[in-house]
Length: 544
Image 1 (cartoon, rainbow, N blue to C red):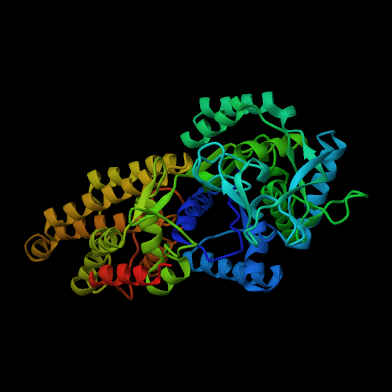
Image 2 (image 1 turned 180 degrees about the horizontal axis):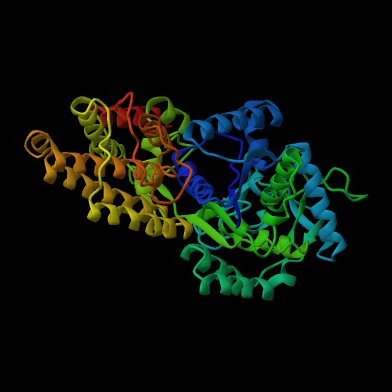
């Protein structure tokens, strides 16, 4: 089976924070899991380097768009590598291959009759002498009354046009913009209304999308899909490949979501492979992103694929709700955020992966608090999982000269382990990483109880055969935990792999015990709880 996994493309205008990582992490869990199952996985993403947020950041810093994009793209690459993300290709939207492929998509939509030109009024700043598309305009959302940008309201998720906003202001200078006429290409979204309604109805019937994706998409469809401009008057981006439209750019709405397809094309070119198996009606296609990105993946991208007659539509949408920080909304402008580079400099990547999964906002908003983060590391990751591994392997190292007893294992514990593969696998495939990880930690707690009840430190002298069964069973559990947890906690699992000299390339029970263990080291270190107050103080001091 071919499995396509697309992680949302972060804007290369600032560092990644924990909200970003929380929404993207399920993609890597899926990719690792499906590879272990032996499926043909293509996991792609990249940095959005063409959007207006990058232009705004460049203006603020009096530098070039390329300089900003280069800086943050490289930081993203480093962050994802340190977190253990296993993208097959992580690229960028200002790459030549992306520009060429997007132009091809644009011309195909035009040829198929889904694009048309239209003269429109657009916001124009007389001070800065430029048109002001989407995020270059800020104001009040006409739908809910919250502060909003000219492309979308973060509060109610409504897609907007800059002219929709009340109390409009130029993002660059703060003045009220004028209204000026210009000509643009429009995408006839309305042509796809019925197809999209049937598409979403099927996704709901088969329970392949998150509830938030279903409800938000149904709301858009009930309102009726308006045709949308797909070109903009911008200095940066992908040139419109049509005579008479020189200087205009293809709008980020259609070119950024097309990145999943253009990245696949580039991966195929680099590896000399055809990509058709990942872009047809038989493909399992996951799109992993936050709630604010739902309409781009549930409406806009499917409509584009329909428009170019590509049958590889999104089958699974994994759209997290929002992550708050100490019960407050994350705010990059106020620096109320925990930045991923800082976390990776100061904490184990598995700690971050564990907490953001076990506390994932899968069905409702979730909160990151330093207290919960540090206590979950010490209590669950270290106290339950790492402690179970360490005390068993250290016991064998000391009392059995590192030789694993080659005896039959406990049937009850064996059955518990076997059940996990099917249960956890089904949950991961449904995009439900949180209950999947919870189930594995239920097994870990049961395994600790088994070790305590069997008391091998006593039976080693009084009932050596019983002691051998206990330890053999625990090694069996550990090597299977390393497989079950590999999608979630890859760094610790790689260390277990080395200590037991086993492979972690299969999603099936491993019943062959290793002969010898070696170089037993603690998987994690305890975090001093004093760090809780220190981190809170640091955040308060850095808040703007």
